[in-house]
Image (tube, rainbow, N blue to C red):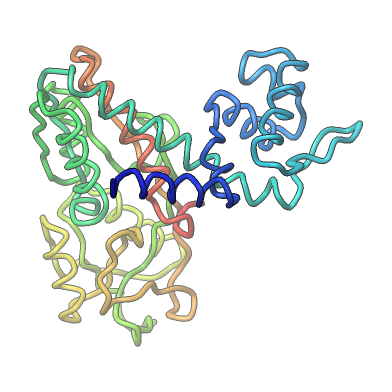
Length: 314
């Protein structure tokens, strides 16, 4: 009797409220993809090529979505379309729904993938967002044995070439270098907040032992502007590098990724020259292109773009 009364009250409540109507409305993910494509392209004709539908079909899908949300999402003009205020508010929701659906499908598909994947990570990423990404990968691919190797930049690229690693993230300078470019971030001078260059003295550097891309950047930049320098401390670890800088042994060149809170980015006010940007590259072994490796490679590409702070990117 109690359940019957509860059911009556439940039905009466939702029949007398707008929530009841909302619960009956559903989003077609194909229509949402068309909406996002049209919003990003600015015209239905271009969006139709992106989603593989005719222009007429795209127009009908947008109209269907507008009926579902009971809002006009686009302003139609001869030159194209633009989002209304309602369309701009709805766009992030549409993207979130699509992302959640894609993430769920990837996770479920991962349960059928098997094999081994060996991935190399620079020390700069080891304590930031990559551990969470790798942990999520192992949970969604329980039959894949993932081995992560944290090492210096130069050693990671060589390990892939020798077949000791399947994937590796590295920093690089030149466009002709190996690996796929995922992002570009600035190289910066790092030191204590009150550091200033003394023209009477050589600039002390704390750096990784050679060869090291950031060591080369520091030395070449100082030499090109006529400043002398000396390497006051060599290190094989990022933690050792920060310890040396914190102890006042010198300044370092790195990216702002994983910058210790007690150190700061130094610039022209400290008397230091500008530095070039560096590219984050993804290397992969050609001879071990297993499904597990391809999945992890694609996830790394997506997550680097999604998680790397936009204020770091060039």
